[in-house]
Every structure is written in structure tokens, then in C-alpha cells.
Length: 87
Image 1 (tube, rainbow, N blue to C red):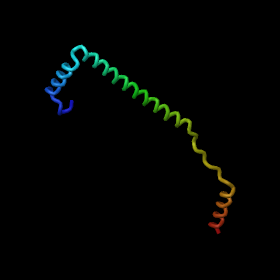
Image 2: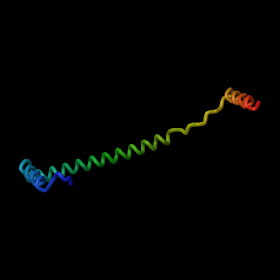
Image 3: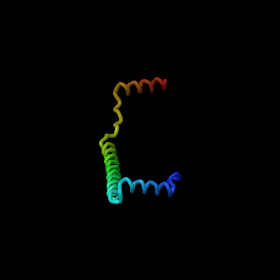
Image 4: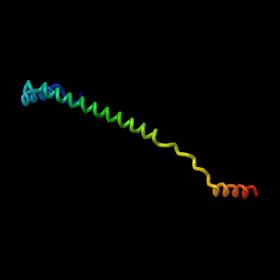
């Protein structure tokens, strides 16, 4: 619990809530709030799972980069450079 909220502050908030909403409405509000929080957590969990599977699917779908084939011009130039170095 945060250090700035003491027992007297909690009591004051509870009394104000009882005065505003009454004893009958507070349990319904609590249940409704709890259901909303549960739904939010479930939605966040599903979103994380979808994101992880999407990342895995993208990683599998990407082909591995192939080594480029050397063109005959590049090979000929490399051979000429080797001969020039040897001479």
C-alpha cells in the first residue's frame, strides 16, 4: 500500500462511497469492476499470445537468404587480380 494512504483515509473513502451509493449498490459495483478487470487481463493475455504466434509465423515464413551466385564477370575479374598479384 502506498505510504501516503493511511487507515483514516481508507475509512473516509469507504464512508463516502457508502453515502453516495448505499449498501445495496456497492457489492454490484464491486462485482462489475472485478469482471471488467478480469476481462481486461484475459484480453491482454490473448493479445500477447496472438502477437507471439504472429512473430513465430513470420520467422518461419521468411526464407533464408541465399548466397548470391558469382557472375562470370566477377570471377574473371578476380582471376585477373590474382594473376596481377602473383606477377
